[in-house]
Length: 323
Image (cartoon, rainbow, N blue to C red; front, side, top):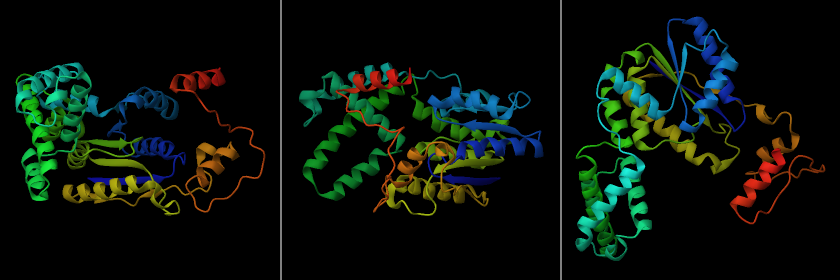
């Protein structure tokens, strides 16, 4: 079991390299299953690229997943796919019920507890707490240790409606975060992963619960390869700080999973692949975050600035230009 990283700035050809790597591995180990994990919004485009880049002969040997579809596949394979997944609307309804139940016990949020806007904020906060694997008891200990009475009161309210909401959710449903945790715990029983290589592309960072899921992938898949948008030469300073933090976390989970670390591939072309046909965009990509930056002395032909009145005006302008 091993883990490999592919580094490069935006547009440097990381995705192209992923498909080249899959093609090479298909030739070297044709009996191995190739899985491509991308964000939900990229699955259709990734399936198109599989056909275009790998050809018809490989299209049935490479499967594109998002986190949600891979979770469902794991649970179908390992057992446990019989639960009812709660929808976003369902979560809003349960949060409304939870807030109504604890309304009289709230202090800071009592007068806004029934407002639709607050219900949505509370639901999103609960989701974020679960994505970050935040444990209520540890949070209470940290707040008590802070010695701040106002902060303590605020989090007393938050934890009150959060725990009530969690109890409501788990009466007959699970949400997507619970499902991911459950799938990670049962991943060792998923036969389709035993001889698989997992390629992870198009992500900038991961929540703690996603990192935990990736750790389980490292433990159970034959090989994990991931792209990171990052300037390894370090010339762009803190622009890639979030990605650097993600890299550190990935090495930590790889160490815990006790997998070998392959030599990384670093794409260092001066002009990224995506911008080779457009000198102006190549200059903008290279210099935007640099200080001091270099001036582009030619007259721009392909870059313009438009001041939109609102988002609708902005979209309409872009659509007209594309047409």
